Picture: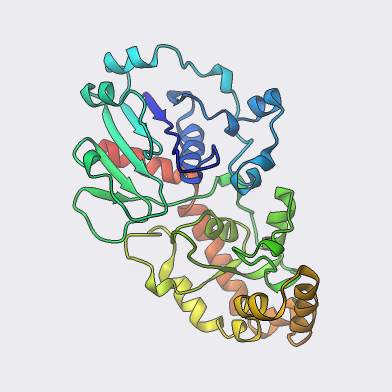
Length: 331
């Protein structure tokens, strides 16, 4: 099996990396190895190439956490004569890993006999109708049902998922508030994941789009997402998340947010980091420690373990890649 994975640079984005494109590339390379050729080459995904270029991972969107610097063997991939190979039907599958912008070799790809897939990684629900009948179309933010469009979601590299939840934690609710820059205190990936691993619950919610890598980072760390307004999420968006379980958990423990409303706190009362830290001290002094909280609510540990096992089985980048290729085979 030969797979060509094409990267399109979205001119509307300031950063070279694209989370969904990159998540799928990790899965494809880990699952199918050297049968996958990424072109023109997502060099920023490869540890050896980043070291050669002396690149600062912090310059990427998301500070280079989770997906980056983990692939190997960039120079071992044969990226020669790609256009000629397309014309000669060399590849079994040609996948556009992101389609916003000018797609490489587009006319030649359409003429080829290779099976084709188009991945719409954008945050908005807009559909590129021109591509709907050119191959299989996969859409991340899918807000209504289409006969010929398949949902696709973020995932997490298997190697980033912890083996077991921590028995001892520091926080009932993680100190990071999505979208609130003052709480993004983590310049190292290990510290970032340790924060989630040390938190029983972690706040997450829709930002520009419903699906977000953060949901999967939280789950991979053994923390429980408190997902705001998840009941409003379209049926065909975030389809791999255990949405029913997360809704039930939110209903069961959303009372925590009555003690701690991060939006109101930061917007109206605490406009700097020191004030926010002081607030957290007072907040947590009114609640039991996380260990005492677990003793009082043992169901929390059960939820953590169940969600972690679900993540291992269903939410890996490798599973994402396998499901996509199986869909291509089927259709």
